[in-house]
Image (cartoon, rainbow, N blue to C red; front, top):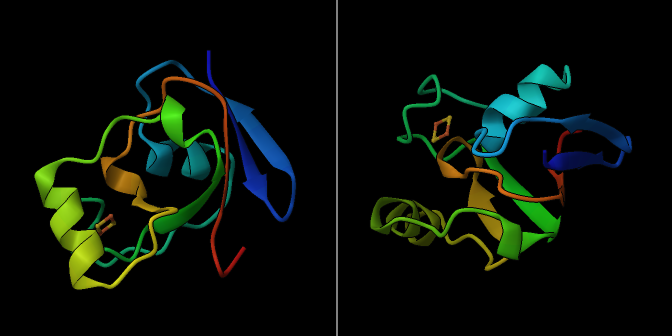
Length: 95
Ligand code: FES
């Protein structure tokens, strides 16, 4: 099962393969910004992927459009659209 490490706290959680990154952070007890209730609209749940990008689901065309719209960096992903298939380390600007 994938282990997600949430920085800068270093808190981590093990989740079933295929879990949404958004849900993993919530289960770890950290707040995740959102104004669309994880419906893949607002883009506020973006997270920086510090390691393990290759262990995540590939971005859909819809996620690519959101990342482009919000001028996000290549290391950022929309957490409510990302499924976990291996270990990764992520962060946000507000944790
Ligand atoms: S919570 Fe709105 S896009 Fe993820």
